[in-house]
Image 1 (tube, one colour):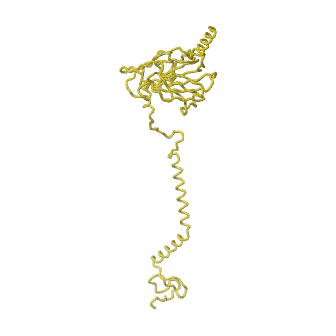
Image 2 (image 1 turned 90 degrees about the vertical axis):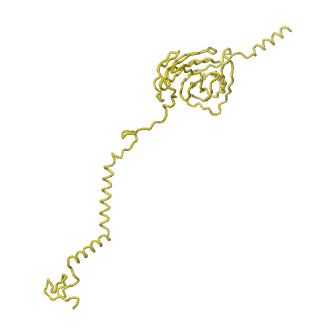
Image 3 (image 1 turned 60 degrees about the vertical axis):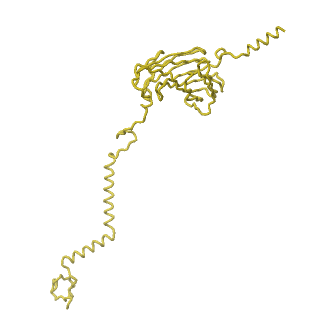
Length: 298
């Protein structure tokens, strides 16, 4: 009887749930945390880029802890970091032990999690922020990407920083390689900087008018083609004039004008009855043969 009772107790103990880091849970291949202070809101935008290990059997439930008072913005899943989507993602959120736990049913190895953390402190021009990470899974590679806000200076962090250059948004970035972070091990670090204004970094990304000069690619300059256009117009005018003057109606009008000119020069309607020469107005005798002209009144 005693042996049976002990066997039942042992089976019950083996069936009790235990922390994930005590079960040899699936590992996370990499985590990159991007911190964008005062980007489009006056607090900290936190973006997690998570890649599950190839050993993870999909779909898999993944629990991610974030600050308890954070405002969750986006949960996206996909095959790669470039193809994640927030459409139809199955996830739940609960508060547990001072954390907000986002439980994601991931059908792809790439996860992107975004939220706004209101715990960015402002003391005059000095800003400071503390980040915390605690996971149920081993992380093989943990890195942090820092974005220096617009109009900020004296940027520093408790982690060693290396410059990551100015990105396409014209903002300075820094990167820190933390390395492996075991499951259940808390990771905390801080950052600080000086910022004399409350202008958000996104305000620098507003569209500006683009000045296009003559050398800009794809631009056609009218000045380059103006001489050719004037020459073509001149040729068209010459050809049109020649065609106009060669029309029959225009030749007839010239003959009509010649007749009118002859009459204005003194020509009359009298002809000599002997030689047929045309007489001028006022002539009494033919200027060719001398015969008397017959006047109209005769």
